[in-house]
Image 1 (tube, rainbow, N blue to C red):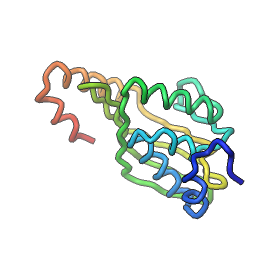
Image 2 (image 1 turned 90 degrees about the vertical axis):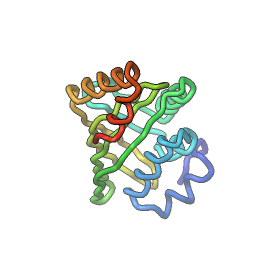
Image 3 (image 1 turned 180 degrees about the vertical axis):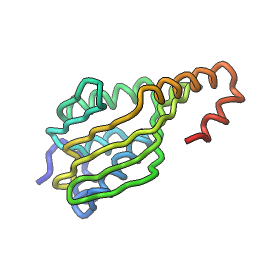
Image 4 (image 1 turned 30 degrees about the vertical axis):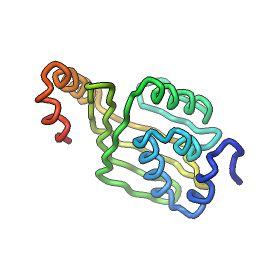
Length: 156
């Protein structure tokens, strides 16, 4: 059964998709700034955790945050290195990037997703704060010295 607030294309696509396919489609939607599609792939009772940061609970709170990022032109890029599923659980090893203007910060992330009935009910990401801090410093260096930006963009 699909929630009435899910995007129209999510039910038919997600219903036949494996949990890993749903996660991949979700991350690709975020990277494409297709907020409506991404929101359509999460459950009404979504739990979104960036470990060590406050937990976001519910589709509406997630949607509000995703739309705020889009309105502020904060870009998201993702490179999935590994993805594995066991039942309804999907594990990802990724490099994520947050971009704002000339600033680009990319860092390693390990994510756990739970997918039920074609929607994501849990998204929990783990990352290393030292790595995020270094990525932010590299991003700032890329703003100050543009020729460094391309070099950093190619690093994993």
